[in-house]
Image (cartoon, rainbow, N blue to C red; front, side):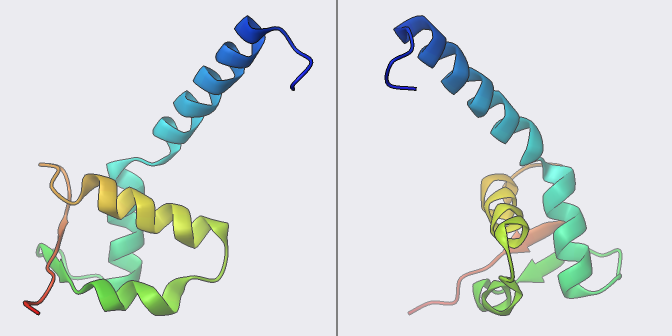
Length: 85
């Protein structure tokens, strides 16, 4: 990509950014949390340590990123609580 035209590089980076943004949705985060925390429909309180055992591949890391990005979203069906130090 170093030999390509700077405009081509900018387009490729913009496309990558759009792909990442489109895949890291609040729906993805909700689905991941529902699977990790159980099927109760109430708003789920998630302790950050619960994510530590679920990293098996890149998809799991993307799920965590989606959770962190959307934790304060009105559409999030979960809340991440960090205990006081």
